[in-house]
Image 1 (cartoon, helix red, strand yellow):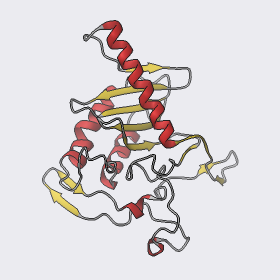
Image 2: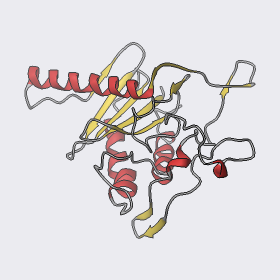
Image 3: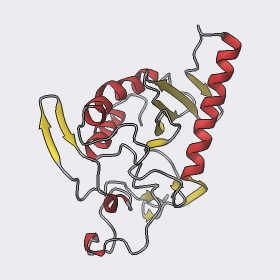
Image 4: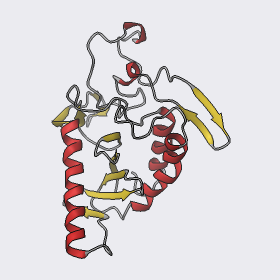
Length: 225
């Protein structure tokens, strides 16, 4: 059993956050203008001639180098959205793919650009949810579905945010896991963050504390391997 990826959509059907763990192929970067900024540095389209001062000695951009501000509160750390320049390269903590001989290999990206992938994931969830409502009425809710290669889990908040997770098809329901992500890191680092504009249609919700907290929680699950 394992966890593949996490998508978060706002009530405007826009993907505002993405994170993955066990994808064998990296997703293609989104087409320019097809994805909100600050969704994930791994899928943000590269900008030519980006600020050269923020490049490292190897010529790559740092993923999380300059948050605008950091505040402390009794409920945890609150941090602003990362600057756009810091979102053009994958985080340095992302390990390279390993070949059978143990040597590092560059992870190839295949399939659709990420913005098209995100639209397909949302479209599948929306279609199945509407079908369940029509067939079963208000007493039934779409929670998950399984294919031969993956299982999709859904948790929707009262404000319209949709947390979608893809996992191994044999994984038990992760709805409670998505609920915990919402009630914990999402509330602490996004909703209660005075420097994070909610429902703005301008940018995603990515910040390093929220991403690190989600990563730590997912890696601690029994379903994660």
